[in-house]
Length: 271
Image (cartoon, rainbow, N blue to C red; front, side, top):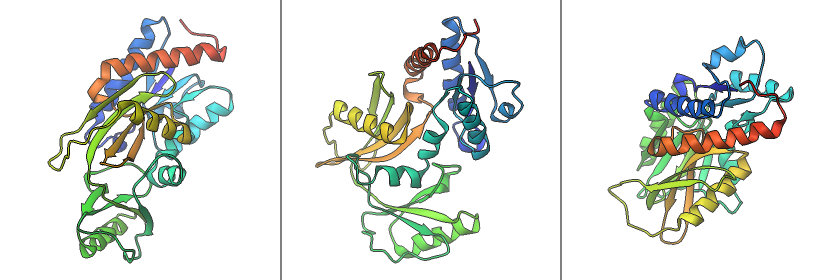
């Protein structure tokens, strides 16, 4: 099996954590008697031959390479298209109008100014339209139209051509992790000054995660969700997060999932 690390630029302040979950997953798979080789993304371009792959990389060049491997019959988890579907605009577009609630959002060209009405007392998030985050100011909240327009111009100066504007949902932030179809689920409430202490059903949140992952094609994922008094809203969903809050448990669950999928392929294992 081949494991592929995430590019450093897509791991702002999480390089060690992201590397740790991939390394630990590879170690668990080796305990099952499999040969596992862990690669940096650039190394897959020189790989002598493809293989069953579990990958955290996100760059378009490497995702295209993995898609070519899939076309040759070598499974990749998460699927490259599923990783692309976690890019914000794709995610929101695919989930809007489904049973998964998402905040009200707007896609805006950074060459234009905000004219749409938002409740600035609650706050409006600005996020780059494609990747989850490459630096801290890729995701910020503002409470006036003037400051929001200034942030849009800053994105334009960085050659980010589109931005997502998203209404702020006051409520309690829940972070959760899962492997689709495994039954395993881990969630925790994130400490916030504005937390209301709303009650929530872990089973209901797990169901939301499974539905969202199914729409996006994800198998290994983590997500952020805001619970309000009336409902909950999915804020972000990530392909192969660091699983920092439950790394040991997650690595075992992911490894078991991958070994099971490998055995279903009929590929000849290297042991």
